Image 1: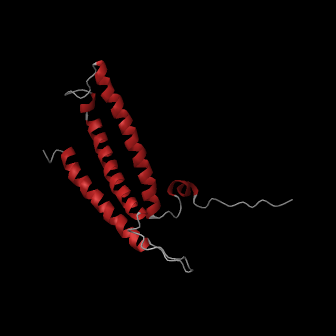
Image 2: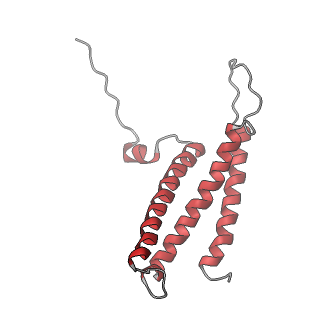
Image 3: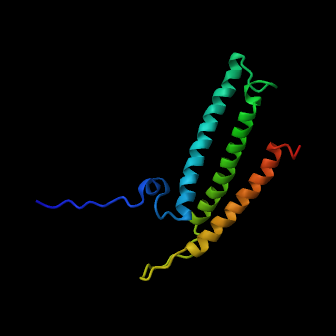
Length: 145
């Protein structure tokens, strides 16, 4: 009978939550998926709230449910998710079109990596998303009218 090998989970809960040796690109991928699901959830809620107007329920009037501070924070989070998702999606489109990868070549050991081009592109897109977040966030805190 064959002996079963066991491997200890040396990273514990952090290995499950943090993913061990995830790079920045892996976190960007996970956050892109999460923001996409969040934006989808927002659109579904938006459809429900908008359809309530057909039955005479107006949640957008002053002092109603959607005028509460909790929903203002929610609006900002949706805006932040949109800013990240839009610029990371633009980065992914550029990578898929080959802008950030370079010309194809035959893979010969030692393999070359395109991280030297892709990572600066990711940093540039995240800086643009942060600038958009700051510019849009000024309206949420009342600095811009």
